[in-house]
Image (cartoon, protein in one colour):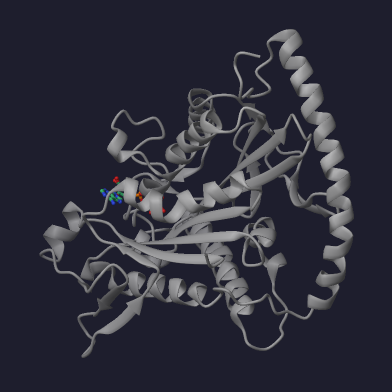
Length: 388
Ligand SMILES: Nc1ncnc2c1ncn2[C@@H]1O[C@H](COP(=O)(O)OP(=O)(O)OP(=O)(O)O)[C@@H](O)[C@H]1O
């Protein structure tokens, strides 16, 4: 499997698009991997190719299976992964990531996040008897270049730090230990209610921030005492938009400019990673790229879901989203090339030693959580074998 998969999802036309543009489409479906794009003013169509293209009639379950399921399976085997939804405001990022709501009663409409939650606990149920799990959840949003803790809104300017033991991390972020799917969904709902949304011409509940969910899955084998840890970042990006189309002014305009700046920082990082020549990778240009530094390219798995409107009304935004996805596609299987590569190789040797320390620390943590769970009926640990 390659390290980066790039998929595109076209949502159905909305009422405004059906009315104003008489339902005219800027795309022509070829197959599951190729789509033709044509703006009204273009003479010729352009072909775009991706790992998978989901058209207007696609199902949430199929999007999850292709985009996120391999990443969850890998995370259970200690390979970190990231799923990002990218696209203009109102293109279907939140619909794909969460569904109409995180706790929707319609199982068909469940988005990636509730499905990830479900599959993690299903996999735990089916795991080997000797396996014990510790599941941790953190949620932050990056709003106006400030990191806010969605699980404790008093923490509204968290800092990204780096050390040899943990790599890149958000210092002081709330980490909730979760023991069931139901509990996880409740926490997610509470956190999401704290997210900054605003009303734009394009979407009456537009996300004005990048929302980053971090799930940590720690698995210990009670027989051989080995521990493995996998992390999954799920990122619902704020809308990439042409400022004039959203009707933004004042504070909204300022928000839109900040969002565009950080999305272009993400684009620049992707460009640098795909460059043939050694070059500096500008991770530090935005909080978003800084947080994701360890999970773009490298050994981790990344899935980018580019969400688009098929309407001619939004042809230029759709084109820029398709181009963004095409740039990201070039990272595939490509070794990370940058001016700091030599240093990285040396550091990775050092990192191995630190990881051994981390394992010991994790074993200690797991033992103490298990003890607490047994003594006090604490909700800290998911015991695989409930009969214990
Ligand atoms: N695949 C889809 N099928 C049906 N409806 C969809 C689909 N994708 C999006 N929608 C609908 O389109 C509207 C906008 O979608 P959504 O809120 O997901 O956009 P967004 O990209 O997250 O926007 P923003 O960046 O402003 O948050 C919502 O009403 C949503 O239900």
